[in-house]
Length: 327
Ligand SMILES: NC(=O)c1ccc[n+]([C@@H]2O[C@H](COP(=O)([O-])OP(=O)(O)OC[C@H]3O[C@@H](n4cnc5c(N)ncnc54)[C@H](OP(=O)(O)O)[C@@H]3O)[C@@H](O)[C@H]2O)c1
Image (cartoon, rainbow, N blue to C red; front, side, top):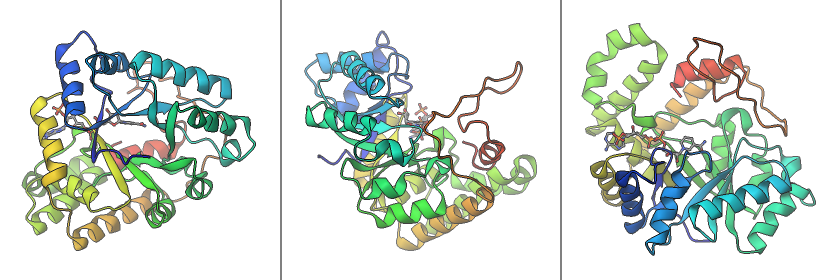
Protein backbone atom coordinates (compact mmCIF):
# COMPACT_ATOMS: atom_id res chain seq x y z
CA UNK A 1 0.00 0.00 0.00
CA UNK A 2 1.50 3.37 -1.03
CA UNK A 3 1.74 6.01 1.65
CA UNK A 4 -0.57 8.95 0.86
CA UNK A 5 0.83 12.36 -0.05
CA UNK A 6 1.62 14.57 2.97
CA UNK A 7 -1.21 16.94 2.06
CA UNK A 8 -4.43 15.44 0.78
CA UNK A 9 -6.86 17.78 -0.95
CA UNK A 10 -10.39 17.56 0.49
CA UNK A 11 -12.99 17.91 -2.23
CA UNK A 12 -16.08 18.72 -0.14
CA UNK A 13 -16.16 22.29 -1.43
CA UNK A 14 -15.02 21.72 -5.02
CA UNK A 15 -18.31 20.11 -5.94
CA UNK A 16 -19.39 21.64 -9.24
CA UNK A 17 -18.00 20.03 -12.42
CA UNK A 18 -19.38 22.98 -14.38
CA UNK A 19 -17.25 25.42 -12.38
CA UNK A 20 -13.83 25.73 -13.98
CA UNK A 21 -12.09 26.86 -10.79
CA UNK A 22 -13.25 23.69 -9.00
CA UNK A 23 -11.91 21.41 -11.74
CA UNK A 24 -8.68 23.44 -12.00
CA UNK A 25 -8.05 23.20 -8.25
CA UNK A 26 -8.52 19.44 -8.16
CA UNK A 27 -6.40 19.03 -11.30
CA UNK A 28 -3.64 21.17 -9.82
CA UNK A 29 -3.66 19.20 -6.57
CA UNK A 30 -3.37 15.95 -8.54
CA UNK A 31 -0.65 17.36 -10.82
CA UNK A 32 1.36 18.24 -7.72
CA UNK A 33 1.03 14.70 -6.41
CA UNK A 34 -1.63 15.28 -3.76
CA UNK A 35 -4.14 12.58 -3.01
CA UNK A 36 -7.82 13.50 -2.86
CA UNK A 37 -10.39 12.94 -0.14
CA UNK A 38 -13.98 12.60 -1.34
CA UNK A 39 -17.41 11.18 -0.76
CA UNK A 40 -20.55 10.39 -2.69
CA UNK A 41 -22.29 12.85 -0.37
CA UNK A 42 -20.08 15.84 -1.29
CA UNK A 43 -22.41 17.27 -3.92
CA UNK A 44 -21.02 16.52 -7.39
CA UNK A 45 -17.40 16.49 -6.26
CA UNK A 46 -16.91 12.94 -7.59
CA UNK A 47 -17.87 14.23 -11.04
CA UNK A 48 -15.21 16.93 -10.68
CA UNK A 49 -12.68 14.15 -10.00
CA UNK A 50 -14.00 12.31 -13.07
CA UNK A 51 -13.29 15.39 -15.22
CA UNK A 52 -9.69 15.38 -13.99
CA UNK A 53 -9.36 11.62 -14.50
CA UNK A 54 -10.73 12.02 -18.06
CA UNK A 55 -7.79 14.37 -18.83
CA UNK A 56 -5.41 11.45 -18.39
CA UNK A 57 -4.57 11.98 -14.73
CA UNK A 58 -4.78 9.18 -12.19
CA UNK A 59 -6.20 10.75 -9.02
CA UNK A 60 -5.52 8.81 -5.81
CA UNK A 61 -8.64 8.85 -3.69
CA UNK A 62 -9.55 8.33 -0.03
CA UNK A 63 -13.31 7.74 -0.27
CA UNK A 64 -15.86 7.67 2.51
CA UNK A 65 -18.41 4.92 3.11
CA UNK A 66 -21.30 5.04 5.56
CA UNK A 67 -22.78 1.60 4.91
CA UNK A 68 -23.42 -1.29 7.31
CA UNK A 69 -24.52 -4.17 5.05
CA UNK A 70 -22.54 -6.05 2.39
CA UNK A 71 -25.03 -5.14 -0.36
CA UNK A 72 -24.98 -1.45 0.54
CA UNK A 73 -21.19 -1.44 0.74
CA UNK A 74 -20.79 -2.98 -2.72
CA UNK A 75 -23.40 -0.65 -4.22
CA UNK A 76 -21.93 2.47 -2.64
CA UNK A 77 -18.34 1.73 -3.62
CA UNK A 78 -19.42 0.78 -7.17
CA UNK A 79 -21.20 4.10 -7.41
CA UNK A 80 -18.18 6.01 -6.07
CA UNK A 81 -15.91 4.35 -8.65
CA UNK A 82 -18.36 4.95 -11.49
CA UNK A 83 -19.00 8.60 -10.63
CA UNK A 84 -15.31 9.42 -10.06
CA UNK A 85 -14.12 7.53 -13.15
CA UNK A 86 -11.68 5.57 -11.02
CA UNK A 87 -11.26 1.82 -11.32
CA UNK A 88 -9.86 1.54 -7.81
CA UNK A 89 -10.29 3.41 -4.54
CA UNK A 90 -6.93 3.69 -2.83
CA UNK A 91 -8.35 3.90 0.67
CA UNK A 92 -11.89 3.67 1.96
CA UNK A 93 -12.84 5.41 5.20
CA UNK A 94 -15.42 3.43 7.14
CA UNK A 95 -17.48 6.14 8.77
CA UNK A 96 -19.51 6.56 11.91
CA UNK A 97 -17.65 3.72 13.44
CA UNK A 98 -19.37 0.36 13.44
CA UNK A 99 -18.75 -1.71 16.55
CA UNK A 100 -16.05 -4.35 16.42
CA UNK A 101 -18.55 -7.24 15.93
CA UNK A 102 -19.27 -5.99 12.42
CA UNK A 103 -15.56 -6.06 11.63
CA UNK A 104 -14.83 -9.43 13.24
CA UNK A 105 -13.64 -12.32 11.02
CA UNK A 106 -16.59 -14.21 9.56
CA UNK A 107 -19.02 -11.31 9.73
CA UNK A 108 -20.60 -10.81 6.26
CA UNK A 109 -19.84 -7.09 6.34
CA UNK A 110 -16.17 -7.78 6.97
CA UNK A 111 -16.17 -10.41 4.23
CA UNK A 112 -17.50 -7.80 1.80
CA UNK A 113 -14.70 -5.45 2.86
CA UNK A 114 -12.14 -8.20 2.23
CA UNK A 115 -13.69 -9.09 -1.12
CA UNK A 116 -13.22 -5.51 -2.38
CA UNK A 117 -9.50 -5.71 -1.60
CA UNK A 118 -9.16 -9.21 -3.07
CA UNK A 119 -10.83 -8.03 -6.28
CA UNK A 120 -8.43 -5.09 -6.57
CA UNK A 121 -11.23 -2.54 -6.18
CA UNK A 122 -10.01 -1.09 -2.88
CA UNK A 123 -6.43 -0.68 -1.62
CA UNK A 124 -7.17 -0.72 2.12
CA UNK A 125 -9.39 0.67 4.85
CA UNK A 126 -9.30 3.39 7.44
CA UNK A 127 -11.61 3.48 10.41
CA UNK A 128 -13.18 6.82 11.21
CA UNK A 129 -12.86 7.50 14.93
CA UNK A 130 -14.50 10.28 16.83
CA UNK A 131 -14.58 10.66 20.56
CA UNK A 132 -17.92 8.91 21.00
CA UNK A 133 -17.11 6.19 18.46
CA UNK A 134 -13.72 4.90 19.60
CA UNK A 135 -14.99 1.42 20.54
CA UNK A 136 -13.48 -0.59 17.61
CA UNK A 137 -10.01 0.84 18.13
CA UNK A 138 -8.52 -2.22 19.85
CA UNK A 139 -9.70 -4.53 17.09
CA UNK A 140 -8.49 -2.22 14.35
CA UNK A 141 -5.03 -1.72 15.84
CA UNK A 142 -4.23 -5.39 15.31
CA UNK A 143 -6.16 -5.88 12.07
CA UNK A 144 -4.24 -5.91 8.77
CA UNK A 145 -7.37 -4.98 6.83
CA UNK A 146 -7.17 -1.52 8.39
CA UNK A 147 -4.12 0.58 7.60
CA UNK A 148 -5.14 3.23 10.08
CA UNK A 149 -7.70 5.67 11.37
CA UNK A 150 -9.22 9.01 10.40
CA UNK A 151 -10.15 11.74 12.83
CA UNK A 152 -10.20 15.50 13.26
CA UNK A 153 -6.71 16.42 14.34
CA UNK A 154 -4.97 19.77 14.30
CA UNK A 155 -3.42 22.06 16.87
CA UNK A 156 -6.97 23.18 17.68
CA UNK A 157 -8.85 19.98 17.79
CA UNK A 158 -8.40 16.31 18.59
CA UNK A 159 -11.59 14.34 18.46
CA UNK A 160 -10.18 11.29 20.21
CA UNK A 161 -10.37 10.33 23.83
CA UNK A 162 -7.06 10.63 25.69
CA UNK A 163 -6.89 6.85 25.81
CA UNK A 164 -7.52 6.39 22.07
CA UNK A 165 -4.97 9.08 21.20
CA UNK A 166 -2.29 7.38 23.31
CA UNK A 167 -2.95 3.94 21.86
CA UNK A 168 -3.03 5.25 18.30
CA UNK A 169 0.22 7.13 18.61
CA UNK A 170 1.90 4.02 20.04
CA UNK A 171 0.61 1.79 17.22
CA UNK A 172 2.27 1.53 13.84
CA UNK A 173 -0.86 2.57 11.99
CA UNK A 174 -1.50 5.60 9.87
CA UNK A 175 -3.51 8.48 11.16
CA UNK A 176 -5.32 10.64 8.61
CA UNK A 177 -5.75 14.08 10.15
CA UNK A 178 -8.81 15.98 8.99
CA UNK A 179 -9.14 19.78 8.97
CA UNK A 180 -5.61 21.05 9.64
CA UNK A 181 -6.86 24.65 9.46
CA UNK A 182 -9.82 24.03 11.77
CA UNK A 183 -12.21 24.74 8.93
CA UNK A 184 -10.67 28.18 8.38
CA UNK A 185 -11.06 29.56 11.88
CA UNK A 186 -7.49 30.75 11.95
CA UNK A 187 -6.24 34.00 13.30
CA UNK A 188 -2.76 35.39 13.45
CA UNK A 189 -1.25 34.57 16.80
CA UNK A 190 -0.65 38.19 17.86
CA UNK A 191 -4.31 39.03 17.19
CA UNK A 192 -5.46 36.20 19.38
CA UNK A 193 -3.19 37.18 22.23
CA UNK A 194 -4.10 40.86 22.07
CA UNK A 195 -7.79 40.07 21.94
CA UNK A 196 -7.68 37.42 24.63
CA UNK A 197 -9.36 39.28 27.47
CA UNK A 198 -12.42 40.49 25.65
CA UNK A 199 -12.81 37.39 23.50
CA UNK A 200 -12.75 35.10 26.53
CA UNK A 201 -15.38 37.20 28.16
CA UNK A 202 -17.58 37.18 25.07
CA UNK A 203 -17.12 33.63 23.80
CA UNK A 204 -15.85 31.64 26.76
CA UNK A 205 -13.63 28.58 26.61
CA UNK A 206 -13.44 28.23 22.86
CA UNK A 207 -11.51 31.44 22.43
CA UNK A 208 -9.42 30.72 25.49
CA UNK A 209 -8.23 27.68 23.60
CA UNK A 210 -7.19 29.76 20.61
CA UNK A 211 -5.47 32.15 23.02
CA UNK A 212 -3.42 29.32 24.58
CA UNK A 213 -2.26 28.31 21.11
CA UNK A 214 -1.56 31.92 20.22
CA UNK A 215 0.70 32.25 23.25
CA UNK A 216 2.48 29.06 22.33
CA UNK A 217 3.00 30.27 18.74
CA UNK A 218 4.38 33.58 20.03
CA UNK A 219 6.74 31.77 22.43
CA UNK A 220 8.06 29.69 19.52
CA UNK A 221 8.32 32.67 17.16
CA UNK A 222 5.71 31.25 14.80
CA UNK A 223 3.72 33.88 12.95
CA UNK A 224 0.39 32.15 12.49
CA UNK A 225 -1.81 29.46 14.01
CA UNK A 226 -2.07 27.96 10.55
CA UNK A 227 1.71 27.36 10.53
CA UNK A 228 1.64 26.13 14.14
CA UNK A 229 -1.02 23.59 13.25
CA UNK A 230 0.74 22.29 10.13
CA UNK A 231 4.07 22.01 11.92
CA UNK A 232 2.42 20.17 14.81
CA UNK A 233 0.95 17.67 12.35
CA UNK A 234 4.28 17.31 10.52
CA UNK A 235 5.93 16.50 13.86
CA UNK A 236 3.43 13.73 14.64
CA UNK A 237 4.95 10.53 13.20
CA UNK A 238 1.63 8.69 13.17
CA UNK A 239 0.08 11.30 10.85
CA UNK A 240 0.33 9.88 7.33
CA UNK A 241 -1.47 12.76 5.68
CA UNK A 242 -3.42 15.91 6.51
CA UNK A 243 -6.70 16.49 4.68
CA UNK A 244 -7.30 20.16 4.10
CA UNK A 245 -9.15 22.23 1.58
CA UNK A 246 -9.33 25.63 -0.04
CA UNK A 247 -11.08 27.32 -2.91
CA UNK A 248 -8.08 29.49 -3.68
CA UNK A 249 -5.24 28.47 -5.93
CA UNK A 250 -2.70 30.47 -3.89
CA UNK A 251 -3.77 28.71 -0.67
CA UNK A 252 -3.51 25.33 -2.38
CA UNK A 253 0.01 26.10 -3.59
CA UNK A 254 1.08 27.29 -0.12
CA UNK A 255 -0.35 24.22 1.61
CA UNK A 256 1.50 21.95 -0.83
CA UNK A 257 4.71 23.98 -0.47
CA UNK A 258 4.45 24.21 3.31
CA UNK A 259 4.18 20.49 3.97
CA UNK A 260 7.46 20.11 2.08
CA UNK A 261 9.30 23.16 3.36
CA UNK A 262 8.26 23.67 6.98
CA UNK A 263 10.23 22.09 9.79
CA UNK A 264 8.28 19.89 12.16
CA UNK A 265 7.45 21.64 15.43
CA UNK A 266 10.17 21.18 18.08
CA UNK A 267 9.32 18.52 20.63
CA UNK A 268 8.59 20.97 23.46
CA UNK A 269 5.94 22.60 21.24
CA UNK A 270 4.43 19.22 20.40
CA UNK A 271 4.38 18.29 24.09
CA UNK A 272 2.62 21.54 24.97
CA UNK A 273 -0.06 21.02 22.33
CA UNK A 274 -0.57 17.41 23.41
CA UNK A 275 -0.91 18.56 27.02
CA UNK A 276 -3.54 21.11 25.95
CA UNK A 277 -5.42 18.42 24.00
CA UNK A 278 -5.37 16.13 27.02
CA UNK A 279 -6.62 18.93 29.26
CA UNK A 280 -9.40 19.87 26.82
CA UNK A 281 -10.45 16.27 26.53
CA UNK A 282 -10.47 15.74 30.30
CA UNK A 283 -12.83 18.67 30.68
CA UNK A 284 -15.04 17.86 27.72
CA UNK A 285 -15.05 14.10 28.13
CA UNK A 286 -16.10 13.94 31.78
CA UNK A 287 -18.96 11.46 31.99
CA UNK A 288 -18.97 10.47 28.33
CA UNK A 289 -20.20 7.03 27.34
CA UNK A 290 -18.84 5.40 24.19
CA UNK A 291 -21.36 4.52 21.52
CA UNK A 292 -21.28 0.78 20.90
CA UNK A 293 -24.24 0.52 18.58
CA UNK A 294 -24.00 -0.94 15.09
CA UNK A 295 -26.66 1.53 13.99
CA UNK A 296 -25.60 4.66 12.20
CA UNK A 297 -25.91 7.69 14.44
CA UNK A 298 -29.15 9.49 13.77
CA UNK A 299 -28.85 12.99 12.43
CA UNK A 300 -31.48 14.80 14.47
CA UNK A 301 -33.97 16.92 12.60
CA UNK A 302 -33.43 20.55 13.46
CA UNK A 303 -36.44 22.26 14.98
CA UNK A 304 -37.63 25.28 13.00
CA UNK A 305 -35.48 28.31 13.70
CA UNK A 306 -32.60 26.31 15.25
CA UNK A 307 -28.99 26.45 14.11
CA UNK A 308 -29.27 23.13 12.21
CA UNK A 309 -28.68 19.44 12.79
CA UNK A 310 -25.81 18.34 14.96
CA UNK A 311 -23.12 16.06 13.57
CA UNK A 312 -22.41 14.61 17.00
CA UNK A 313 -25.89 13.19 17.30
CA UNK A 314 -28.33 13.51 20.13
CA UNK A 315 -26.01 13.66 23.10
CA UNK A 316 -25.97 16.78 25.22
CA UNK A 317 -22.23 16.26 25.44
CA UNK A 318 -22.01 16.70 21.64
CA UNK A 319 -23.39 20.19 22.03
CA UNK A 320 -21.03 20.81 24.93
CA UNK A 321 -18.04 19.67 22.88
CA UNK A 322 -19.05 21.87 20.00
CA UNK A 323 -19.26 24.81 22.38
CA UNK A 324 -15.81 23.97 23.73
CA UNK A 325 -14.15 22.95 20.50
CA UNK A 326 -16.20 25.00 18.07
CA UNK A 327 -16.51 21.87 15.85
N1 LIG B 1 -15.89 13.12 8.60
C1 LIG B 1 -15.17 13.41 7.54
O1 LIG B 1 -14.76 12.53 6.80
C2 LIG B 1 -14.81 14.84 7.21
C3 LIG B 1 -15.31 15.91 7.95
C4 LIG B 1 -14.89 17.19 7.63
C5 LIG B 1 -13.99 17.39 6.58
N2 LIG B 1 -13.55 16.32 5.86
C6 LIG B 1 -12.61 16.46 4.74
O2 LIG B 1 -11.61 17.39 5.10
C7 LIG B 1 -11.54 18.40 4.08
C8 LIG B 1 -11.11 19.70 4.71
O3 LIG B 1 -12.11 20.17 5.60
P1 LIG B 1 -12.30 21.72 5.92
O4 LIG B 1 -12.33 22.47 4.63
O5 LIG B 1 -13.42 21.83 6.84
O6 LIG B 1 -11.01 22.03 6.77
P2 LIG B 1 -9.67 22.89 6.60
O7 LIG B 1 -8.85 22.48 5.46
O8 LIG B 1 -9.08 22.82 7.95
O9 LIG B 1 -10.18 24.38 6.38
C9 LIG B 1 -10.43 24.92 5.14
C10 LIG B 1 -10.54 26.39 5.36
O10 LIG B 1 -9.24 26.92 5.59
C11 LIG B 1 -9.05 28.05 4.79
N3 LIG B 1 -7.68 28.11 4.36
C12 LIG B 1 -6.98 27.17 3.68
N4 LIG B 1 -5.73 27.60 3.42
C13 LIG B 1 -5.64 28.84 3.95
C14 LIG B 1 -4.62 29.82 3.99
N5 LIG B 1 -3.40 29.62 3.44
N6 LIG B 1 -4.89 30.99 4.61
C15 LIG B 1 -6.10 31.22 5.16
N7 LIG B 1 -7.11 30.35 5.13
C16 LIG B 1 -6.88 29.17 4.54
C17 LIG B 1 -9.98 27.86 3.60
O11 LIG B 1 -10.39 29.11 3.09
P3 LIG B 1 -10.12 29.46 1.51
O12 LIG B 1 -11.08 28.63 0.71
O13 LIG B 1 -10.39 30.92 1.49
O14 LIG B 1 -8.69 29.13 1.24
C18 LIG B 1 -11.16 27.14 4.21
O15 LIG B 1 -12.11 28.04 4.74
C19 LIG B 1 -12.92 18.41 3.44
O16 LIG B 1 -12.89 18.91 2.11
C20 LIG B 1 -13.28 16.93 3.46
O17 LIG B 1 -12.66 16.28 2.36
C21 LIG B 1 -13.93 15.06 6.17
